[in-house]
Image (cartoon, rainbow, N blue to C red):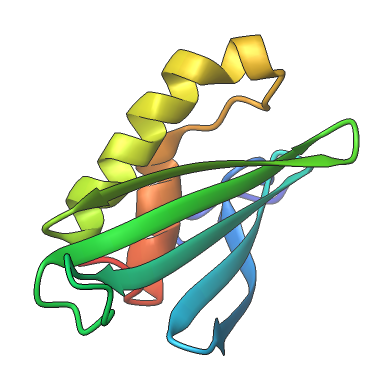
Length: 117
């Protein structure tokens, strides 16, 4: 019988399958319990320059019946923006038909590639 080690990832745990830049936006494509979740991370600014002087914007992209649904939030840090996206997703997700995610586990996966602090 094989033993599980703490370094092994649970099959349902969120994992990043691809990471790339689209212009100034970092895109992390994830698989979570058999579903896709794309997380877009970018700088925000009040004047629209995107220079990061005012914080970070995170968008979570999911699909419902082949329709893309985007939930986004902006905060002063990437971690705070992700937390706000997770809260909004959990609040609005059921009415929109979105898959449920463990946003703390999503944060762990994003930290492993330094996408959030």
